[in-house]
Image (cartoon, rainbow, N blue to C red):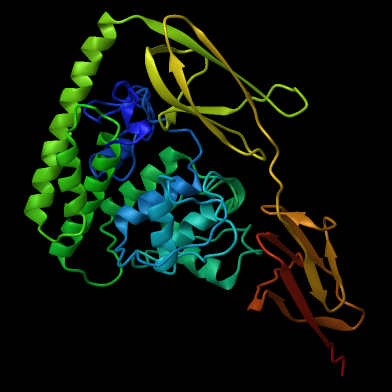
Length: 415
């Protein structure tokens, strides 16, 4: 028997990519966007848009890298406090950890923006170096590892005036699409050799996994078909997996067409969601219906729906609502999260922090290193890792755990 969420009428919201995006026709990155769509690297949104100028999130980036990289066993677990097993980006993020691309620390921040330098670090794990020896003037706070990664792929990125790279600037979806298109145009190869058959099997399984996720809530899809599809995820028969993908795609398409006809012939009713905090103040929160974005005050057909409400710094709420024969108003109260607070332990003298602790996860910390008279810097370490300090004697990082800063000065020999 299907779960309650599978019984809800989600078919009206399933989206199949069989058309061009509605907002890219005159966009500068149109060709690149078409490329990533064709290669199944990036997807659009239920309203048929791509949102090219929307900031790329860390969760979206994990999904792209997962499709490109060679993920092996995913048996181990990860421990991020902000990544749950039922999140759509759980497996991609898990893959990044198990391949050593990111550390399994306290938080991953999947909904935060992907910075340009973090993006460089990820592709440096996957592709062979491609450098055009570009010089940037704003990389003094980068670690040696980050500088190496940027040097390997500096030719892929468009710079900014005054030879700036803007390492902490957020990357847009269009910019990411153009980078992957450029990688293909330049013939940059993935690191290491791989068996094409194994790669085809991995990609086919990923596609099947996505189709199972889309098909699950649809009454049009027989239970036995879904069970067969789920069983194939543990098999290595590429032909059977590809055939199942075709079967599910056809069933989903039929379900969408059937639902579209039903939708045209059935009345719909407006859903209004009022979201407030515990003191009664209104909150502009993000809404989803059946795991897909929902625009407040939009119409829905009669039936049961899963409504999720989320906003940064608040605990998300999910509830089942029923649309009957009239417009519906739902009132939701969000409670503030009790965030973990972290401390910074300083060993040595001459370190000045821009903020006092304890610190919330995700806080940007700037460290100013001020040498004592007649001394110069010998080493600066963050949690045991040596960090490069540029001419400005500053270092910036995002705190995600209790942190140790160790500074060692050496006396200047004037003789």
